[in-house]
Image (cartoon, rainbow, N blue to C red; front, top):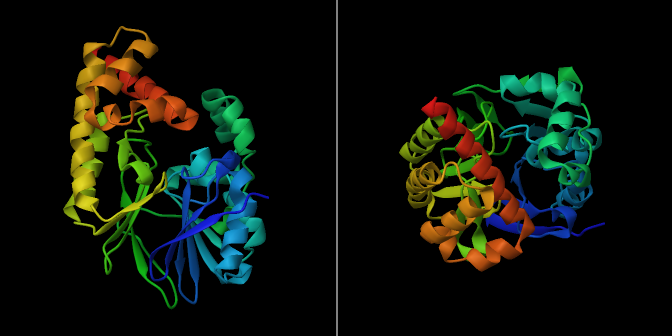
Length: 303
């Protein structure tokens, strides 16, 4: 079994690097500790053994896990929820209303994941169903309280996905952004848009502004880890998405490879680490999927 790396972001807040497919620094599953425990974005099925191992190292028992929260139901964020809830038999899965039926019966979600990700979806592992009575909806403004721990507020933050939520802990100013604020590579201080189809640029920009207005002090990305420069990164990502839209619009009819090279050259964030991106298949995959989603949005806006 892959051994996880456990990182402490704050007292009572941990990020577990579950090392999917043996790759570290790509998925952070967050754990909020109180007498009750919340797990945010459990990741794909293949990472659940490492996640459980990390929870055990933190002293978390199956019965103490009260909530499993998914920012959205894409396979790399919530594909392993069913497997985790088999271990944590008293836990409840909290998702956007649009995600409920797909977590109870993930057959369409699984087929869609394979269609989009191909072999990678197979490596991530199948999406196991969750009993419907163990799934609850979260909507804008709903609050989730942990006994002996913090209270988390749900924010609807569409753009990356129509069913995307972010979670905000107001006392410490902690924002869990899922994919709504991009992919962050902490060791490089690198920010990359994640805009796969069906992406909505207008909604994504509004979601970023909404989160920045909360003035969070800690921004926790599922991909990967956290930054104390929370508002700065949210504002920077607004400008980065606008820049990408301009570059993609200019090269709209060109091949994907030419668009990739244009973005690596014209986005200063990517240009600083162009070689590292090219050599990291998961990061290259993020950029390629993002090109597809942004191109489709811009083409639809033209028509």
